[in-house]
Length: 462
Ligand code: ARG
Image (cartoon, rainbow, N blue to C red; front, side, top):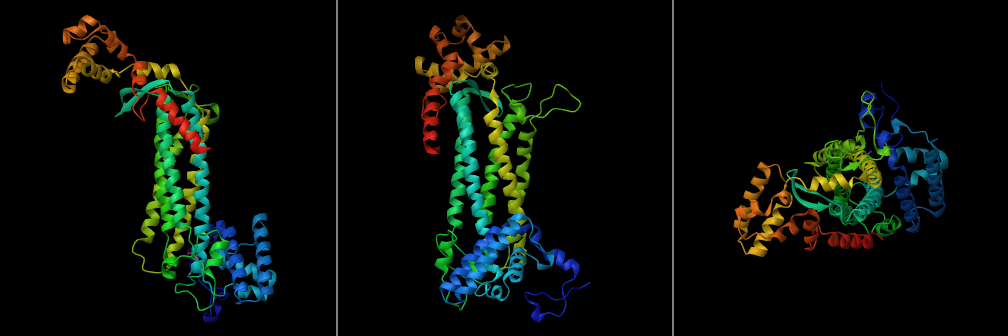
């Protein structure tokens, strides 16, 4: 079945689209999320057209006012969205026509939906960069709180998920602060690069009307206009940078989520999730499940997926605009929604969780975690080459393991049977507290270093 031809381009058409054509073509179902950006862009455009004498000031005023009425209808949920009007741009313009009549027809002078959608989407993604920045700052603050409280709580540091050397809880929390700080910097960097306006590029070639692109750029908070009209309507790098940055951030979130899943297990007992962030089991009364951490771990899938999907949409597209590019929005919307949710959930979980200091301490003392300290002592105190010290230590670890002892439990006699120079004061470096306190190199795990980093980041965040 066909409908009457389209009011926006009906001049060339005698029949409307097939229903399936309408279904595949329409984006209003999702691009209505850019309504506020679309209206901001149109208001800036109309004001500029009047300032340049391209339309008369009375019409521009009617357009500006009418657009505000449209915005209030959308905000109130009373706006009559129409699929036959395809997208947010044509829905807004059609409604504007109903409200103000003839002057509405002058709004699209010196403009195309190609530069219109490019500007709307840029504004939307720019807002998301700002939202991500705020959410990351909150997460960093929650991690800093944990780090400050437990700057000297000893826990095992792992490589290969095997106990490696003792570290501090604060040090481990601060590792994530560093990661999320890089994510923030990436969002800021992407934002700065995307902050040029495509508006005024029109369909692809620019326009013969004497427009002022600097004025519309400034009105919309851009640093200036994009420099090539073909690039301006064909570019979706800003969306891809947002997705790539979101992917890295989500990957970081999945790593801490995974640690929280492991750490909250009965086998580890490193952390207790608060009731607010745990779920029970409908059949096993003893269970406290870290569902939020698991879901964050899983959400990276859709965020990576969005990144790959949009890269694939854009790959091989000839310049300039192609309708393929309409597929950009749902990917970005979905990725942004789930990234924000994951950041908020992680911030809540980290802020409310309780580290189990005793379990951390006990685990730190397992797995011969101070073997490196023993080897270092042999080098420092006895002048052994490191490779020999490594060998001596390895022999002692084997002896301890065979006797089911930890290193500090080996008697001096046994130690001296392996290397006669070993003295009583070796035990000073075998305790986990001594071990962490000794790692005073810049960025090391010594509580003094951790406290210095906490102080530095607090300063940066304030
Ligand atoms: N809904 C379209 C999109 O999201 C708007 C641009 C349409 N442009 C065009 N030449 N058909 O990409």
